[in-house]
Length: 166
Image 1 (spheres, rainbow, N blue to C red):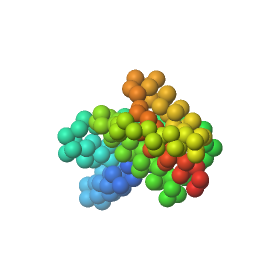
Image 2 (image 1 turned 60 degrees about the vertical axis):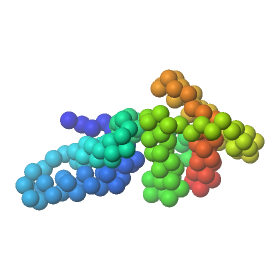
Image 3 (image 1 turned 135 degrees about the horizontal axis):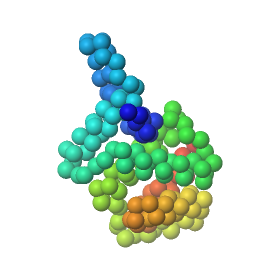
């Protein structure tokens, strides 16, 4: 079976993927069993899910990877930047998106009711806010769930940072 999200899992959950690769290597060495490379992503998926199960939240690593990939695609396209997995700023952005996906699927979105940061960023970084608003629209249309201005503001802040450093 082909894992259609193998690239996303490898890119967005690299530690878990390395553990999966390690497991495949051990199977090959000890039992002379050769499994397809996509199996490392399947192992990573189970590790990511198990990690979140300890937090007592329903979590699906495939759905999280899909959400992260959709947001990264919107951001890279709208801001004219490339996916750079080896770039520390891009990696930091992806890490933020992992935390965002965790909060999103756990139903724990940031919501202080204070729009100060959103208002300030709207004035200072209008392109990043416009991009984050596009993400808000996509999430509303795809997942039928809204994002708070606070979440959009933090997303815009990270979009601005990654676009400056790209």
